[in-house]
Image (cartoon, rainbow, N blue to C red; front, side, top):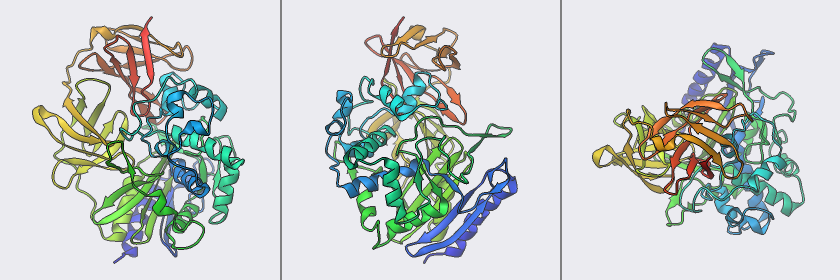
Length: 502
């Protein structure tokens, strides 16, 4: 039996916490197929003007936007097995060969452009247009790996899919969104970048440890994250997906249809939605994150209910949204992985690593919550990346991460920096230079000739992790000396930069 009162109480407690802090806030809505059953808001949409954040406050949906593009693609009848290059010319051959479906389900090994540019020293606060990002994309030397082998989050497939539907429809994506949203909530709109005005838009904030600061993201958003709207508008959109008739009827099962890896196993990531379970209840959801904005939507299709949480504060939105939905469904949240080891782990060769801390795991820089798995071991509470690990011999962790089998061994805290890494290295395609010193420091590419100092965390086998912060976000690419003597720079989302001595 659904407990709307308990769910509203859980949502109200969250909103009251924002209100009590007199800082940024957000809104939480509970709904079923027929209507919004509870809505609460708290905190400020603008700290400058002391404007309250309400369920009708426009905000940025960020990556929740993805499934809206998927709806448009499905309605247009575009073949998911058709390669991107059949629509778009001038793509690098490897990218052109990636099927549209793999570009959307994160198994296409497409390098994420934000991390590609970050690794070249271009901050995500820089203002870059769609054409400028496209120029860099068309110069990429290849893919992160073989398509179909693993799920690794990337916005690039969605950026390219936007170009595909614009080419096929002859319409700008903003026009397509206006047509789609007009049947549900006309306030939902596509914004190309942060400079485009949205009346009443909540300002995004992040906490630097002392004060709240405004978030910035200068890059062209693309359909991967450019939708703006209110919490109420997003709830009405979700209601339309859950409904058995109406403008979006029948699309949710198609969005959530199983996607498979090359080995035939299922992926938790579908077409802009992540499939998960809460106790006995099957869930579909997705989060959204831009500097200063964190959101999550969760649907329980069999029960016909859902929750939307949007906020203009740089804090986790997944677990709070899941907590509210658990109260509604009468389900118990998974047990925290209290017996999981902590520390840094890495594969015996190559750039793949993970770091475990109590209740969380960072996989090459991508974070997920870690809970106890049924039958032993630990699994993610997947916001995006599904993983299941168990103890192996010699303290190793074994299992599947993003659909791929992995074995990670502990990294000793006193691992020395391999002297073979030291020196000056020049990237083949761009000419940017990084310098590694014997004292464990490195000068990484950043903002033209400025450079960014970082302390390296050594890994065995001539590898090390850099640590690059910008605004509220942290990037930890792995530098590893390949057998051919080249230095590769790799993260969860971008693994294509190769440096040579010089």
